[in-house]
Length: 132
Image (cartoon, rainbow, N blue to C red):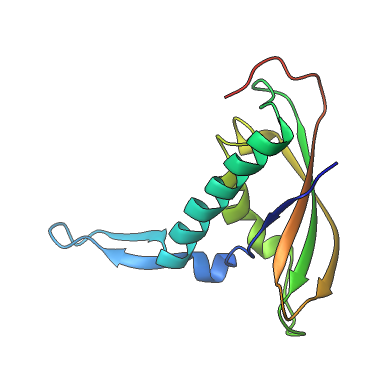
């Protein structure tokens, strides 16, 4: 099985920023520019991967297993699961219909200063009947 390789997603702490609507004064949490860029780039890379591998988007209600390996840029203490929210949102609609059905399996983490990234293996838990 070929792995999907993506850049490291931003952590939840860096994925959102505070925004105050200029006319209403309403305060909101919106995606940071870094998170928006990651979502765009990850979706593009995932689409390329789908074309290369022939991955078929499973039908709604089908569980999809994501096995994830993390390669950090340094030894700084980092939570792996703190990056899953933005990652799962970025891949929704490209690799699966709804991230509600995704089972994340964090397999391992290592240090790779030269090439920080995540590598993902996907497995649909039923036969694929349709593609996006």
